[in-house]
Structures are given as structure tokens and as C-alpha cells.
Length: 142
Ligand code: IDP
Ligand code: MG
Image (cartoon, rainbow, N blue to C red):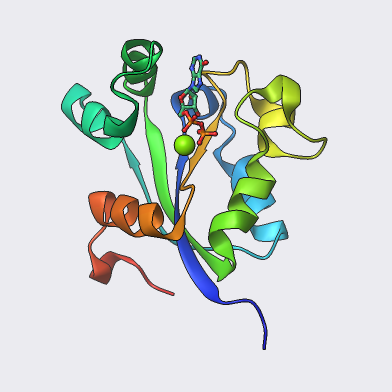
């Protein structure tokens, strides 16, 4: 039996949209076998960003993170494929680009630990919650 087909939520962050890197980042996903089955460009409101990153509310970087995430447009997307959650985390690389493996998105594109170009769900449960946060089922075409 092969790996289970999963869906995960990805966000191309404002540092990357600002530098016109959407296509280059999407190529990384597609080259690794993930399919972009939903995608839209948004400018998050402060309320949306705070709600999305709710789990980090008590962290010292929360306020700055929200400010960064609303500093420009983002591209929210659903990625689908075998083991999509962990596969995407692998392609993204470590949170801090200084620790990211060569060839990963964050190693190649991130500016800093905060402006690190992409978000990816960290578990299947969070993927479901995060996908529902941005997309209705009819907007996802696998
Ligand atoms: P992840 O995005 O790799 O899952 P998390 O720990 O969930 O990392 O943190 C969420 C986001 O918060 C990171 O992607 C990054 O933008 C920001 N962040 C995490 N740690 C720091 C930090 O120490 N300083 C500033 N920003 C941070
Ligand atoms: Mg995270």
C-alpha cells in the first residue's frame, strides 16, 4: 500500500509575494509531486491573522508575526498528494532558514526566521482546521 493521500494548507507569505516568488515556490511544490488543488491571493486583516496564529498568542514574537503577515498580500493554497503534510514540511525546510536544508524553500528564499516565505500545517488535524479557515469544499478541486 502506498502513502495516504492527504491535503495540507500552505501560505506564501508577504516577503515572498513582495519579491514575486509565487511561481518559483509553486514549482518547488509541483516538482516534489504535490498538486495545488486550491489557491487564492488575499490581504489578511489583523483579525484574520490573529485568529489564524491563535496558538502562538502567548509567544514573544506574536505581535510582530501578525504585523508581518498583514504587511502585504499572501497566497493561501491547498496542497494535495501522498503524505502531503510531512512532504510539504520537508520541502519548506526548518523555521529558521539558517537551519534549513539545501534545496528547501526557506533555505533558498527566506529572509529571516520571521520572514520565512511559507507557512505549512504541522499535522493532519491542523491541516483540516486551517484548510477550513480559508476554503469551502467547493473551492478545492482535486
Ligand atoms: P513553522 O512556521 O515552521 O511551523 P512556528 O513555530 O509554527 O514555525 O512559528 C510560526 C511562525 O512564526 C514562523 O513560521 C515564523 O514566521 C514566526 N516565528 C517563529 N519563531 C520565531 C522567532 O523566534 N522570532 C520571530 N518569528 C518567529
Ligand atoms: Mg507552525
